[in-house]
Figure 1: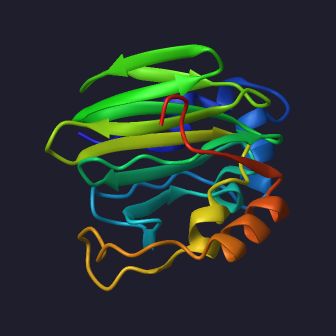
Figure 2: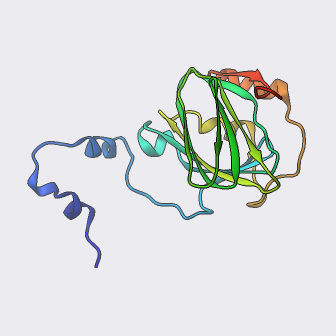
Length: 184
């Protein structure tokens, strides 16, 4: 049996708009995507599938599904505008957040607050998959702008990034790339 959204939240029992209704007035609303649905881009040697954008969430958050190859190590960097949370779906990873070094396997969650340098790497010989939640929304546009549309839902061919272009776009998103991960 299916219940309508209005019956579920009992709209008829309340007076005045809720935060949810105000968000819906901004053009947002409920939606769902399957595992392989969403805008897919090849970004710095990874596959990113955009699950939610600021336009879809009223600016509340962005959500990325990110498949990373074995041995991948992203740069150490700082976000000035958003916090990042990482949920490890598959694989083994190490996260560097400020002075902390966190080993994280499938099912682990790691939080990186804005203003704190962070980065991560994939451990072992298997790829990893993470869900990356950025709050508020904004960062989810960065991999789309830096990357290219994925030709298929696989990892892209390995090639070095255009660092000049990467740095310019990072600056636009108020991200400071600080260099390699600590100890690398």
